[in-house]
Image (cartoon, rainbow over the protein chains, first blue to last red):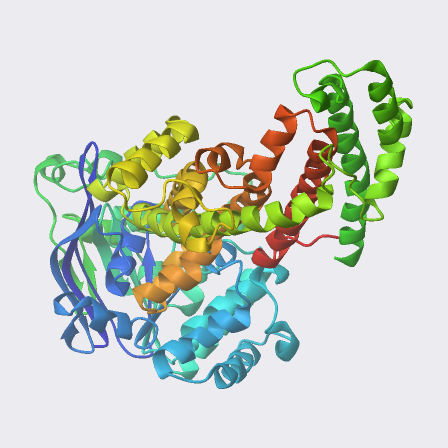
Length: 327
Length: 307
């Protein structure tokens, strides 16, 4: 396995107490595989990604336990300088809002070239040539001229391409894309997603795609991990999930996608709000919102039951959930 | 950009005329300039009338102003009543004040920005609280108190420096006066840098820079600092103009014969020509500084383009 996260716990110290953002997340990605991590905001999907990258704000953040194995090496045991060298070269990250994620006062050429001057010790001139090459690679027209421009001179889609180019620069084994298309127009979303998927296949990159957009997931992901209140509640190959979810939360997510054949009907929404991370409910954290909840859900935290060798669900009644589904 | 500069230069004309006219009128209100010439005694009317005629003071004010401005543009700032050319006074005073200002600006840039970056990166820690407290004290205590206190301690009591700067004002003697002159602005630079750094530190592009695997030093200097310094440099740029003219108190304390000193003497002795001449030049310096700051803004932040 390229990356394995095992029983990761991340906490944030706040004025009101300790917020448990990630509570025992376990997932893995193989080379060339795409894992989609799905969940509402506050479910811990981005925090897990930041912990993997090592860009968590510490303090207030704190990794309270677990392992992050990257190419067999526990990242949490490495010194900061060793981790720094892995960032960018071994693993890279694409952020949601490319405009604010790119430095406004440096040209895109400088920002791309920096990867090569810092990590590879290239000269500025060679790095500039590499930057043009990368911009060509992500199909930015007139790369040679535009390499001298600043981020604000690009359109939203082009800026996200630059982010992708930057992540791709040193051909890392792993790329984490944190909602890479959320800030884009719908028409551009598909183009950017297709480009990312294409490059991922070509370079056999392990891709973690963080999203709350189920539409994106179906096309590009191999596996899905659904997160809720800092836990994985369901983990399965993408087709299994779309065929029949094994967790009521996943089911809620699927049912809240607008569908053409239900035009005119009220759109389904999961009742209630995600839990306050300072006070995660006892038992199954989803029980206050769950239509299937019973007494045992209020007391016992469900483990990740094995539904099949490739599939897990953290619901006491996963079997029922699976059988019920008529989607 | 070119058109913007031209427009700004044209805008400077009314500001320049307004400011100089104002100072010209004010100096006229200040009292009879001839009165000061004869010492404590009243001038005898015949001499006074002759002097007035010689200096053109018998003409209406607007005509005096026009004549004066006409002369200024040929490089003639008139003659002080003691017979010294005002330009001559300037040529000795301005180099001294420029040196003093340079010392002050160097303090602001080096100490101010360094402390600002350190405190901005360590917000809430003891260093931060300590520096913040000191800046608050510096800002609240008037310059003449800080100046006199330091002069007394370092100059008189401990004898580390000369309490009074010699007339040619070499750079090493200007270090303490420069620090005093810079003190309040320095404190503001610290606070401005600190806020700016602390704000930008959490920004997305800094997070990107870290995620790219750049060394911390590079993240701070190339990504964080560059953005955070935009407001600071604007402040320092505008401060150059302010320090040039605002050194009156400091120059007085340390007996530096610069612009502030000459202005002070000029006002005290009702030396119209000196006062108007120096202020005219200071107005120009101020205007140019502001223009440079605005242009610098566009250089530092590529998102700003003047058309």
